[in-house]
Image (cartoon, rainbow, N blue to C red; front, side, top):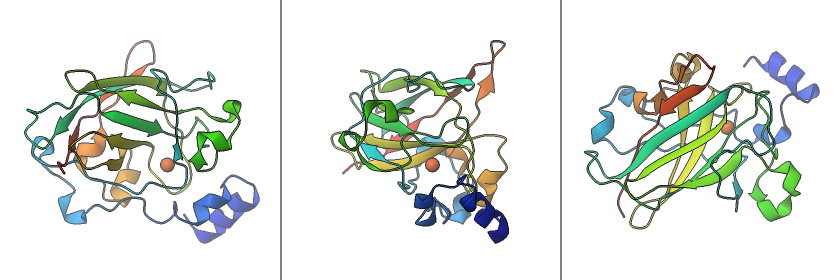
Length: 208
Ligand SMILES: [Fe+2]
């Protein structure tokens, strides 16, 4: 973002101050040489945690616990141990958090859920994989905030594997190129006749 535009947004309160510390710095640590990789045979790349991770969120099937406005989205996938898609990981914990339709997190902050009132917490929660390593959740399509592609944040925790902090992106979003996001985390979300976006985001974890 141009500095002038950034300062305008800051003065208007469009940008929350925690963004100053980290989010406007590129939020991924991809090797730009790996912009196109064989997704089945590579460990899923990590990303920065960002300033809005709140620990202790609840297990959910629908993250939009306050019925905020936006396009409904259903995300599914499988968590695999290692590469090759032959070791699904049961009971993996996938913490997900994302911005609302207007690009705002709830809360705009970090820490633990105990630091906030219940009505300040939404578009966050965790999902547990089933015996086949599969997960699914419902929410609204994340909105945009300055300087980033549209994204979900994931933190995946599973026994025997390294914890993975990453982000999931959207196909057709040219901003992913600005951050050299690898193709495995750019998901082809498609909108059905009811206006619902659906997409599949598989993850390959690195063993301990
Ligand atoms: Fe974010």
